Length: 298
Length: 274
Image (cartoon, rainbow over all chains, first blue to last red; front, side, top):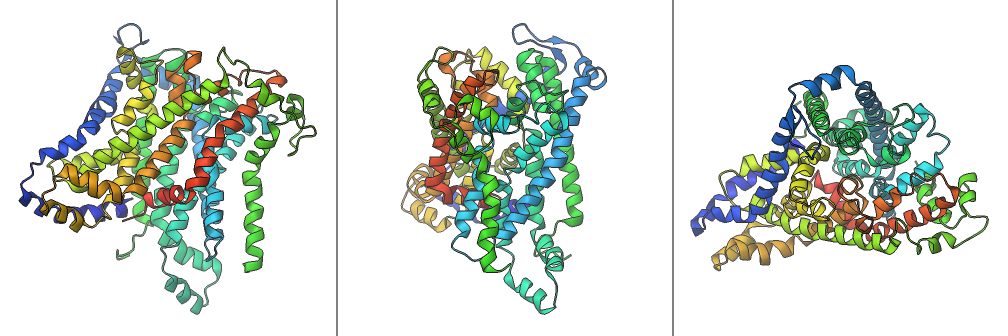
């Protein structure tokens, strides 16, 4: 993501200076930005502060929030067994589905990456499930097709992993675009040196593709933490059997919008935000070791 | 892999991938008991009863109402997103103002922010405004450019427009508003269409937000109507459930068929274009 963001910004910075000469006031920019500013203040930044406050209260939406200090956090982390079941189920789901989806995506991207008139059609066909996968329709199909599995904890989770992997088309098209940017000369040179396909893959494809792999890894991980519809539909909103599919967002929904324990759900939201921020930071830290940006001396 | 093996190999992978969708299409013509008993593709006996049953009332409302509601919500969100995100993107891509760098960084950071984080405080806000159980909580955030992904997509597009074009227009005496309307917007049309269609499809599919905000039967959207079937253990309801499921994905498939190139490429390049 850094390659994407840094370069063009520098370009606009240097080029935009002459505009001032025509004497337009910079405040015109805020006119264009005004809807965004209202949204950022009242629907994003403000709510996050309000959420932090709510997480220290008992709040049922209908009476004023009542300050309870660290109660929600203490109850969540030390008393509530469902909370840890939800953390466990979500962790299992993320750890299995993200690598599985990325491997499928990279494999298929490499398979269909060849000069052919059919490539565009294949790319669209593999992408189609990504547009449908989040729908209740597909979740209901999963419920019927896998109805023998959903009574069994491990298999119910596996059915949801399969639903996630089924949507590998989204990272696949990004991999494909990345593969097409690797200069053919590198492969030609490897062939001249007599490198086999496996060696070529490890020494050329993976390093050249590493920024894209990293981009997909970060985005997919964050996305996997937010999966809701499939788990809701397949488990009938319960997260069962025995909390095996009680994904974090499902439990958050249950606490906040079924039991109306908004204070507790707010504490859960903040915890989720911290965990996601932490994981993203960790991924960025490891990236220094394996993500290679071309143009950079290694 | 030889060229002759390539097509069969790809097609062999596509068959299981697309099977669930094709299965859904055929299963909607099966009887409830046949749906439960077999996963075969073709119905033993073709029936239209499942579709006829959708004419009857579900929760006191006919299925047509759910389609109308979903269309109103998805289309409004699409239009709102195009309008608000293009305005914000133009400011970030082309205009000079002191807070541009930090505000743009903030926008990019919110791409990664899970929706569930702001759900509770937003709900509490919309409740105070008396907007719960209306379509406003679904549409208003789009009118206020909270979908940072699309701002980013449009900024990427606008940066590819040669600056000489704006500058020439400026020399001709155009202000930013005219440049935006008659130079930039026409040139980023692919990005606007991509945004509109993605927003439509994602809103059409969205379950979580609609689930928390909408409750009265005459306001339900398709995902919520389908949810009414989840509780049922009656096999006879499986037929109409799959018929409505199949109908609900038809608009997505139509949009995809019409705009697949634009959608796939818009998605693929959003992260890569420099």
